Image (cartoon, rainbow, N blue to C red):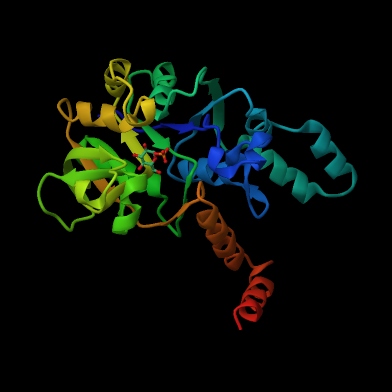
Length: 291
Ligand code: G1P
């Protein structure tokens, strides 16, 4: 069995839920305090042992490339003013992974974006991490838990969590093959964004993490546009279940939907409360506000 050594991060979306800021700033660069959210996504992959990362961008996303590049001028200015620690930190970002970029030519959906990773994957299974899903983990990075599940089963792996009924319409929802409370179970069908909770086959939603097999590209090439007129990754995964079993892996970290404004605010508060330099002040402020 091939090991998972590569990750793909689709980052070509228009970010319409966060206009007007995304008119000029990629949503992946929205900061969780002082760190752009895509930094955490790349870090999650790196902590799971992945070094080669392909970010699929669109024409207005140069700042993501700049962020993962070396900025010689900034580093030299920092060093000249005695800020070696800060300069080293800037260099570490550029060296944390082998980050590559490719442009999706038209916004034709997540499935279409993934197709751009075909030659990068080069016949190997690969991880996919969606930037809207920020996952805070203490020990095991979520994508690492999915890699373990892949190594155990050899199947396609979907990173999932149980979500409240009224939120199921936002996600791909899995149908378990057999009734199960286990953290890892086989899936026999999926419904993309069920309009009504009664159309959802369970309360287990796919939350932005996948281990996909190389044959997904052949399937994607023949996948017709689905929900919203876009080429849906969910449709291709469903079709690929005939070729290889598919599993839902309930990951352990805390997930934030930072494509949603309230989800983004929650992430900022929680990350601030975990930081030694901020937590006391932020906590005191929140207490005062909620008196
Ligand atoms: C995508 C997928 C959906 C998944 C979701 C996770 O939807 O199509 O199956 O549940 O990501 O966040 P999007 O949110 O990009 O519309």
